[in-house]
Image 1 (cartoon, rainbow, N blue to C red):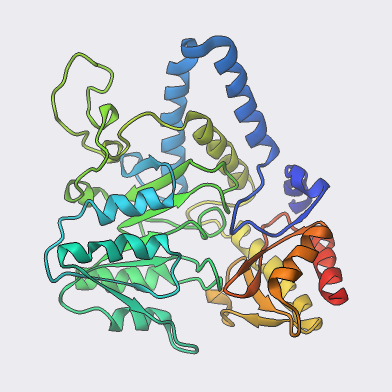
Image 2: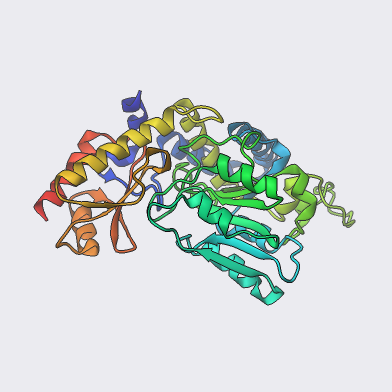
Amino acid sequence: MWDEFRQQMPVTERWAYFDHAAVAPLPRPTIEAISQRLAQSSHDGTAVWSDWYKSLQTTRAEIAELFGADPGEIAFVHNTTHGISLVAEGLAWREGDNVVTLEDEFPSNQYAWLALAASGVATRRVTPAPDVDIVQQLLAACDERTRLVAVSWVSYSSGRRIDLDRLGRALRAQGVLLFVDAIQGLGVFPLDVSRTAVDFFAADGHKWMLGPEGAGLFYVRRELIDQLRPIGVGWHSVPHAFDYSRVEFALRADARRFEGGSHNMLGLCGLAASLGLLRRFGLGPQDHRLADRVLDVAAHVRSRVAEVGGEIAGPVDLSEQSGIVSFTLPGCDSVALRRRCLEAGVVVSCRDGRLRVAAHAYNNDDDIDRLIDVLRSS
């Protein structure tokens, strides 16, 4: 099964690729789908545009089904930051409100909330403490003026995965909104927003979903759509979008009101193809096959890295682990080590002074052997 997945990834012909937490390589079906659209665009122009638009709505419905949402709760965005901004700039904040987040969040999931200081909104950045329950830390930082908790499902640096079910239930009971930067989790771990109390999530498709950059997703719980003031309102925000002579301001009733102008048709076509591939190998609201495979590969990476003396950072508990493995090799500079990896055909990243390996389900023992050979010789 996983060999079949691997055959769909041309990157394996040259590289041992462990950088899915940065930018993923595109699968064959994705390349083919985009190439077909490029040819259509070249030969037919707008004659096929209406077909493209119809397929976009099919994609929206398929994505909604994949994450347990309603199609009207899904908007297409240009990147994760775009989705974060829809919430940060769209909610009607009150002076004295506060947002709770983590100090080790990716910068985009901090800057958007810190910018609210001009409106009298405080951002509380919790420092994760070793051996302390991260969900309890977040809940302890909330009070009666906490409006929203904003966290990454999976930490881009340590690979720590948060129990969204548990966090969401507790926050919903307190009347606190939950925003999730889902970019390091979607594409591997199942998420069913009909069961998990997530109010908003955003994710570009170019990491674990194996899609192109610039084609992402934004989810908003239907009951909250009217609570977000749309930013970047445009012709696509209204129900009579294709009646250009009718300028009458009335927002769409669903999440499409947040899309504003034209879509990244090529990028979203590619994202649809990538998600279709992932669905074949075990991605769905309650399907754990892909997640289990990624965790198995990551566990193998941890074991082999430890064998050569690597000092692994991040969670020990399997329930908090992900496809990301961060470590240092004593006596080695991580930046220089990454450079040696690249020279040997192994793609990894450096984050927070550590080497970051981000393995997907198609990575295999040969890939891991190539990585370990570099570490052993360093």
